[in-house]
Image 1 (cartoon, rainbow, N blue to C red):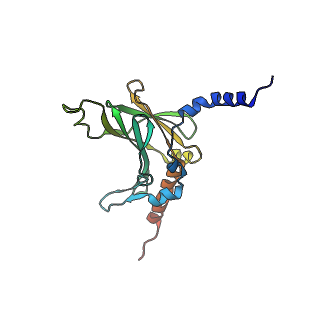
Image 2 (tube, rainbow, N blue to C red):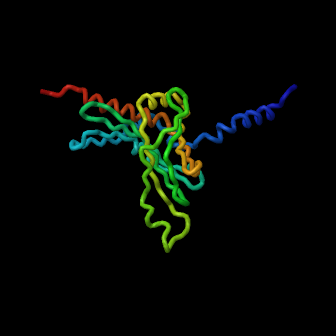
Image 3 (cartoon, helix red, strand yellow):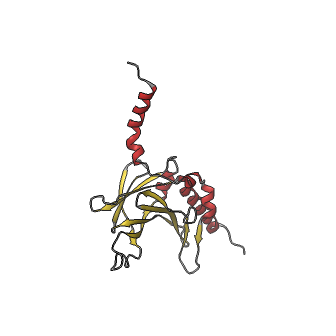
Length: 210
C-alpha cells in the first residue's frame, strides 16, 4: 500500500503530538543565549560577614514569559558555596505571577541523571504580598505571585548539560494537580552557573601572597 507525503506528514504530527503538547515554551531570546552570556552576567554575593557566597544567574535573563493564558514565569539557578569548606548547595528558583485564586505547590517532578522520574518536595513555596487582594474595593481576579525553591545536586545539573532540548520541570499544584506548572530550563543557563562556580572556586584555592 502506498501513502502520499501528506498522509505520512499527518501521521508524523499525530505521533509527535503528545510530546509536542507537553514541551514547555522557551522565549526565543533565551533559547539563543550561550553559557558565556550567563557566566558574564552571574551575580556573586560575597559578604565578608556571611559564611556562604551566593552565585546566581538571576541577572542572565530578566524577563518574565507566559507559559499559559494566565501565568508568567521567571527562573534562575543559584550556588551557595561555604567559604570555609568549599561545599556547594545548588538551588532552582522559580517565580510566577498569575491571575485568579491562590495556588498551592509542594512538589516538583523531573527526570534525574539516570532518566528516572523523581518527585521531590520543595524547600519553600513563598507567597508575595497578597494581603490587599481581594478586598472590599476589588473583588475580581487578583495578580498574585509566588517563589518556589528546591535543592538539586551537582550530579543532576551536570546531567542536564547533556540534554540539548533542556531540563523540564513540573511543579505540582494542590489539590489534585490544580495549577500544575511545567517549565523548561535551558542548558546554557546551568552551564553558565557552573562556569561561574568554577571561577569562584579557583579563587578559594589560589595561593595568597606573603
